[in-house]
Length: 336
Image (cartoon, rainbow, N blue to C red; front, side, top):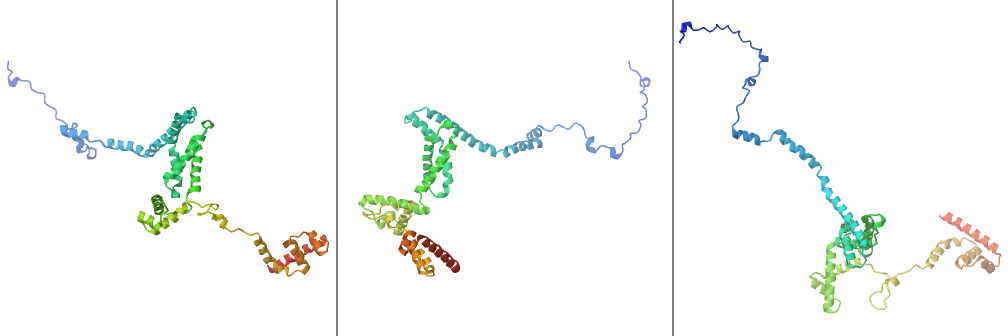
C-alpha cells in the first residue's frame, strides 16, 4: 500500500554543525602531506626500469668489497714464488733420498743426478746474476756455476741436517770467482772489439787450414772485409784474455823465457849506497878509527882479527869501535 507523502515520516531535523576549527598556520601539514596516501601504480615499463637501476647502496657495496682486494693484491703475487721454492726444496730432498739408495755409475743414478741438477739450476742463475757487472756473457757464467752445482751435489750429505741451497751456494759462487780469477782478462775490452776478435780468431783458423800457414793481416782483413788496423786491434785485444807466464818459453828454439830477461837486485848495490852515505862522515874520524871501521864492516874481519892486524888488544879494538860510533852519531845529528 502506498503511504501518502503527507503521512510519510519526516526525518529528524539535523542539528547545526559546529564550525570547523583551523589549526594555526605553523601547525598545518605541508601541502604534499595532504596528498593521497596511495600513489598511482607506475606503468609496467617504468617499473621495469626502476627495478633494473641499482640503488645507491648497491653501487657502493661492490666498491667496498673491491677495496680490500686491491690492497691485498701484492701478497698473493709473491705466493707462487714461495710455493715454487718450497716445491723445489721438497723435490730436492726426495731426489737426494732416492740418490742415496742407488749405485753410482748406473743409469738410474745418472738420471736422478740429472734431475737434481735441473731442479737447482735457478740457484745457479741467482748466483750468476751477482756478476753481471763483470761484462762477461751470462751463459758462460751460468755454465761455470753449473760445474760448482754438480760438485756440490756429489759432496752433499743429507744426514748433516743442512739445506742443500745453503750448502751449495758457497761452492757455486766460489767456482764462478775462480773462473774470473784464472781465465778472464784484467783489461776491459769493448763489446764490439770482443765480437770482432772472435771473428778474427775463427778466420785465422780457417785460413791456416786452407793455406797451410799462418795468414797475413791483409788476408784476414780481406776475408772479414775490415781494415788491417781493425785486425791488429783485435789481435792486441785478444792478448788481454790470457796471462803470459814469465817462465813460458818464447817462440823459436833455444830462446829464453821472459823471466830470464828480467833483471834482479844486486846485493852489492846496498853496499854502494851505504858507502856513499858514510863516506863524508868517515873523513871526520882519526885515521886509526877509520881503518878499524873499514876492516870491521867492509872487510868483514872480527875484532880478534883486527887486534892481530893492528897489534893491539881486542878490548882496545872494542873501545875504539864504540867511540867511533859515538862520533859518527854526533856528526850525523849535527848535519841533520
